[in-house]
Length: 217
Image (cartoon, rainbow, N blue to C red; front, side, top):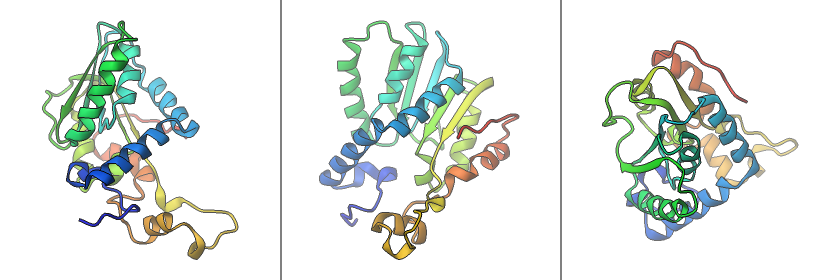
């Protein structure tokens, strides 16, 4: 495996060299405090209608910061399940959650579990709300993952998918040949599995059997 700083390894974090893992963690920490991402997460939480006592799934939870935020909404009677395929990310998420929990005793229970989003170990209709953020773009089996996320959402529950359409990125006044190397590769060499995921979420959800949907821009 190449140690290329431009090559995303989110679908195989644990197989990446330690220095690459450190870079991914640093990037995720920087991204989490970006106003655009914070706003998208707030809108997503509102759209999911999370209430006290709810059980919520955060698919591809990464470092777990959003799982903790949702735990404040579900309260002491609720639970948030964070699932990710990276044990190293989950270990860091659990460590951070333990420290966070000391100052948030009234939050709901948060559990971090290593697992495959395409084969979730939950019965159908387990969750009142399900979210998956900036994960599907990295997965070869995105259709199967979406079907699983829909399966474990209860009837009349809410599922919220947040992802990026990298192929639509443009810069006013800049020709493609002078775009940054990362964006050039994302658009023209498809270094991720689904660079146009963001604009295909609606059709994918409909194929997975969702009866109603809304788009948040």
